[in-house]
Figure 1: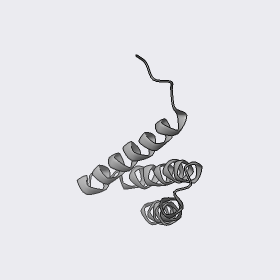
Figure 2: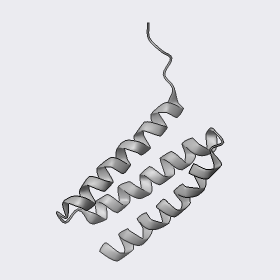
Figure 3: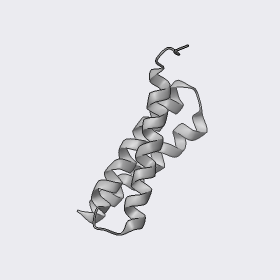
Figure 4: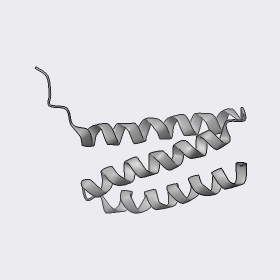
Length: 78
């Protein structure tokens, strides 16, 4: 009936949802770009950790660049 709580699944979907919110904030051009790039950084860590735990090395590697983009965006918008 109820599935066991899966922390890895939560990590995956947390990363996905923060990335979705990031993209909408950037696209809306409403002045929340710093928060958006912070969400991108958080998303990259969450999805990167999820990918590492599941040995999805390509996705884990990609998250390094998303995290770098988040840091650059935060620096540029500060």
